[in-house]
Length: 316
Ligand code: BDR
Ligand code: CA
Image (cartoon, rainbow, N blue to C red):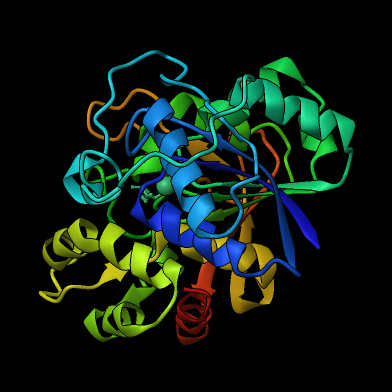
């Protein structure tokens, strides 16, 4: 099976992604989970990861608390307005029986990749702070991992946290830029495609009517998120998009998508564009601007939406 470290800020769609992976035990092994600030603070995010893994029957997977602040230590906005203040629609429920491990998520990530060279994939479903910190601890990290898949960025569509930037990129623009320039074998799953993966009200009603603990928990955890998406995506129905779950599906089935390869930079300082992800499309450079000077990464451009929705629903 694919062996993966999941770095995450659960988060309703992070929960769907983790439950999707938990249902594919013959194909994927979650080696470790790290939490990161983003939708909520890193510590309650780790508590949520433990709850979700327990529901998924993976209560023994270690969860490490990660970065509490972005690299530049700027103030955070959080994602309470879509995910609820507890990250799970106000329905997180009692704590899981397991506790977080006593090792920082970034330290753990660097260590596990060093101990398993070429074997581990990283599925990053939040800001890239832990990955950037791990890169500082272990500069050889890009050559030690099998692959990195990151849900983040907005290229041809508006952002979601601001008009021009996507939340995971904007919540730590500096970390995102460091990771995207480091030479990782990396695939970006941007909102350009995740916003296409619309699970409408009937999709969710099917999940709500399904037997089993995953479906029951996920139905409760998604309530606030569905209400928010009815407004934010303007569809007027209690559905959601599937940001992080799409990245999880593409970890297992990359052939469900099409890609382009480009160097990507992340805007650091714009008064309105901080966190914007930018591609240099000139095809030439000048003395005035020698270009991004960094390796290309894969950017997902198209996905098989019905197939992805079917996979996620079946897993729940
Ligand atoms: C990303 O931001 C978070 O709110 C979601 O969990 C997802 O990772 C989408 O922009
Ligand atoms: Ca997330």
